Length: 117
Length: 110
Image 1 (cartoon, each protein chain N blue to C red):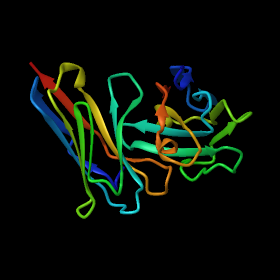
Image 2: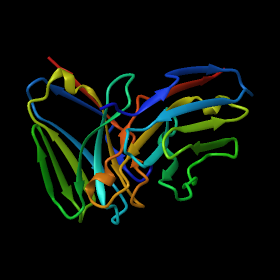
Image 3: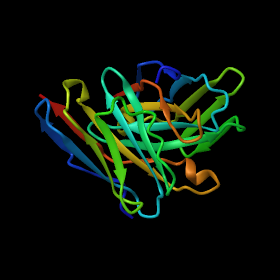
Image 4: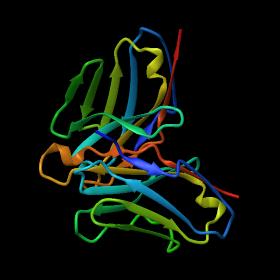
């Protein structure tokens, strides 16, 4: 079966522009997560979608960041008016949302490397 | 990652055992994880341990958990060149949000 896929793999944008990053979770996984990996901050949680419930957005660093998940599957992370400090690798993960240990297995995509010039 | 601490570097000879150590702070973490990241790749889930266990073995990997000291370790037996990567320890302070350490870069030398 296919793993988590993300697109684009690399994105270079100018400061001030908006960007959209896409994540396709593993089929059947109803929980979806976004993380950010940067040199200065390491790996940080951004947002969590759990089935049809309201997402946990507590990790989003500013109101320039938003995410949505359509149809319980594909998710898009949008960064408006990008800044140089937004440069990082954005990682998406998915998991089951059931009882038992499988819900705790988060599987990651290859990431999108964002560079803001 | 400030609540999870790992040493930054480990160099090991091919064929030897590697031991990567991690300390965490949240005693309520249900599961503790080890992820592997190779250059230019995403995170690969290696193994995880339930907090009421003290050891888990999976082929060449052995995870030891000392809950009293909040210490987690990953032992890789018979380390190979393909084991060269960054290894991240992670805890789950609120049941789903992974909190990662800074990662340990393991270099395997011939």
